[in-house]
Length: 620
Image (cartoon, one colour):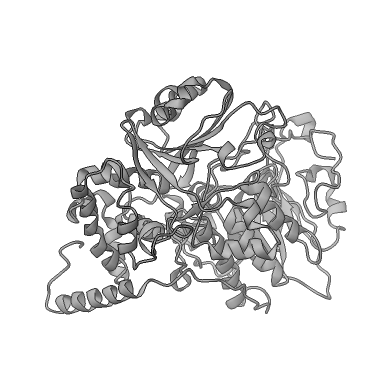
């Protein structure tokens, strides 16, 4: 029976998915439980998750059963597992159930480890949708799946998840300003457009897609081509670009103000969640290159066509890991606040609290630990772990990095509204108050209209709207946010929305939910391998060093691959009691030949100039 609810745990959950109910079991009983059973919890601020440390919907969290729901203060109690002498398995805690956490759990389980995945959400497995107070499904943020997501696609194929059913075909998207349609991002891979070398293909194919931007402004984009060749020349050069703001880089490279304001600024606001003047030039170049310049079809994107990412993709993965031989243990609704180290500078345990309780519980006997956290979650763990802060100063630096606020809104309308493309970006609207904005017509993306309406009779369009860098607009009340969208933003982009009435709406704010890639922040981002040998990090903000993956920035593919590499690192360095199996990682497509040649030439020229004392005129 789950605490607080009096409901039996039925067959919907696999046996190794344990509800947050450790107080139901006396300590003596726990010590007799078989291998693999443990009680634990998490501080979630995981890779690219918009809901750190909380449920993302109107679902009420389970209440504590301790003293009738009142938290008790008492010494830390210990929860541990006994191991069988024969068939001993290394025990690894994975803190955070974002893409990085699930990937680490997958790789560790396949390597024969006992895995405990700790998460703060009521159901990190995606077995049930998050519902609004009126019973309608809700997902925080609308995330796309781009062309170069080979490892996530391989995982889905291995699970027999039908990608053609779960994801849409590649879809075009539109950019709107107060003056109307500014540009359309086409689909390259499914069109008759000739495949040309990058960036010629993009220039040729999109020539007619900019509706208002003059040609003389578009051609200034050529200034970024040199930066594309130069910013990865060597580590020192990359760090120099990282210290510079993207705004300063655009000025030095001669990009026109209108090009930046009408196209690049909104792209960065919805891609990295901050304007150019607050972003690292290096990370901005990574995003622009990976999603737009690497290949002609790099910007091709598709969306979830069936339910949510959690239900359609995460849940099949969770079921595969919690069933069958050597199932992992998933622990929801708890928050990790401390790691304990032994005299050999290794993690041996952690401490957590359960949702709705201040009681501290310890989990001991760990052989390794994976932190799949963002800056906010890292701050909670490192701030409560003075030994970790002392022995791994790089994690203290990561914990000090900033965060960005996000706000998600869903609106159910009384009529269907037609729009050329279901995915749209809002650009240059003063009503955004400095935020980036997107709106999606879910009824044009997902065929199951009844699901979108929570089982009710569908009446019209369902809008999913997201604000990034949302601190200023999030101060508005919920009704004012919905009114702003319907009367000033969405209706300005698509006038047909003026004739639609709101049937239902739901607004959620996520303060500090995602990582801020500020100028100079690269060196402070957590490394894959830390100064504590059996502690590794996963997430889209992690520096992977020699294991760096081609996907950059706030990217689901990069977060997933970082989790695989975190588990692989533990195996390669002997942290798993001799279990050395590593998970395969599929690289993204290689840079095109003309890009490779251009980088070689630039590196040679700059090397010669450097030897005679001439520094780069662009960065320092």
